[in-house]
Image (cartoon, rainbow, N blue to C red; front, side):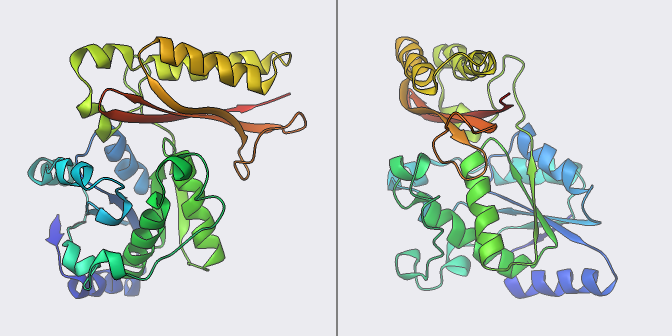
Length: 283
């Protein structure tokens, strides 16, 4: 595995692969890797011959500087895992490489509407940071395909819309959420949980499953299911931000005639902000 931090060097290597008729697949990460990230790498091989993984902690998508400063630096372990996974290039740019004039003055890529609801409402500016850095990374790596986890369902939708509307020639692939044996969605944020909180954390997914089961029976009102789930989470020690049933097409509020639904939730447990979702076919 090559470790590259220089943008020009990376572009030259990807161009050589392209000239040889090989597809490049890209997996952007912020490091602190877990099995879910490695699953993305594994699935990347289904979409091309060469795999590039980036590790870049993006300051532009953090609402809290202390949260950014506290984000774990596990580059040595990440590099070892990616080498074992057969990655071709680990791209590790600096903040100065990505934001030469500082991210506060950087041009922004905005996906209006979809970026302003749910997580966007509770983390103002977050998705502007995400789409801006992902657009930059796409322009640097110039991949044929890029993979993202479905745990970040809203993020995946935002990136797909950005790619479609800005005409990026990149295939966006969503990969199913990797879970612990008790159902907890794998996340770098899980490391912020205390031992006791880690035992409480699977309640979030259990409530998603419970809500799905109730809705598939066809007799429950969406707002009743949402309100009761919020109450259960609060009683279980969470500080929920939202628990909501939405259209999978555009994340608009679900209506009686919507057949393709997703249930999304975000809740704090101690210092960890956990998000998760579950999809269902209604009817």
